[in-house]
Image (cartoon, rainbow, N blue to C red; front, side, top):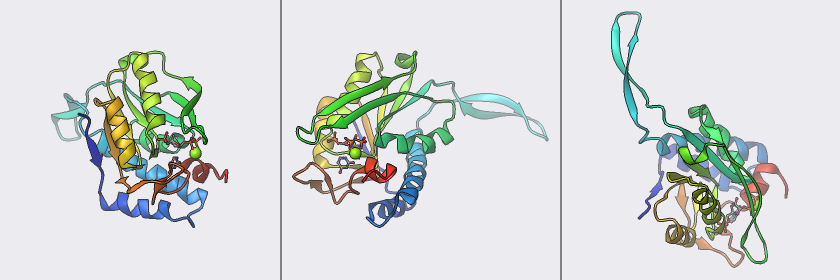
Amino acid sequence: MGKVVVIDHPLIQHKLTLIRDKNTGSKDFREIVKEMSMLIGYEITRDLPLQEVEIETPLCVTKSKSIAGKKLGLVPILRAGLGMVDGILQLIPAAKVGHVGLYRDPETLEPVEYYCKLPTDVEERDLIVLDPMLATGGSAIAAIGFLKDKGVTNIKLACIIASPEGIKAFHDAHDDVDIYVASVDEKLNDHAYIVPGLGDAGDRLFGTK
Ligand SMILES: O=P(O)(O)OC[C@H]1O[C@H](OP(=O)(O)OP(=O)(O)O)[C@H](O)[C@@H]1O
Ligand SMILES: O=c1cc[nH]c(=O)[nH]1
Ligand SMILES: [Mg+2]
C-alpha cells in the first residue's frame, strides 16, 4: 500500500499557514509555494541512492558520497503544479520536466486533458508528479494513469494539501505511489473544494480570480 508522508516540519507548517490566509496575494503565494516545494523536495528525495566517489580536498585524497546517476523527472499537473517546479528544480537541476495539462470540469468534477509533453525517455525515469491540491483525486489519478500507460514504473506524488477522500481514491487507483503532503485537511465541501484548504491554487498562483 502506498504511504502518506505528512511533512510536519515547523517551516512547512508555518508557510502553509501563510498560503491558507486569503489575504496573501499572488506574489507572496507563489514565493511561499516555491519555498515549500523545495522543502518537500528535500524530503521526497531522501531515499536517492548514493555512490562513493574519490575526490581530492585541499588537504588529501578522500572518499565521499555522490548521487548515483538516477534519471529523474518532474511532472507538474497544469496549471497549479507549475508553482512547485522551480523549488524542486533548484535542488535537482538535472531533472527533466514533463507537463500534463488537466483541468477539473466544474460541473462533472472529472479531469479533462488538454496538454501533454513528456521527456522522450520518460519510461526510464523516476518521476515526481506535482500538484498542490489532491481534492477528489481525479486529476492525479488520471495523470498518473497516463504516465503508467507510457511505461513509467516509479512515481511519487508531491502535494501541499490533500483531502482524506482524495487520498483514499488515489490509493484505490494507484496503491504503489507514495504521497508527500504538508497537510491532510478535514474534508471536501459540496463543490469538492478542500476545507479549510486554501481555495483554488491555480487562481491564487496566477491571479486569475
Ligand atoms: O483532485 P481533484 O478533484 O481532481 O482536484 C484537484 C485539481 O484541481 C485543481 O486544478 P484545476 O482544475 O483548478 O486547474 P488549474 O490548476 O488550471 O487551476 C488542482 O490544481 C488539481 O489539479
Ligand atoms: O480545494 C481545491 C480543490 C481543487 N482545486 C483547488 O485548487 N483547490
Ligand atoms: Mg484551479
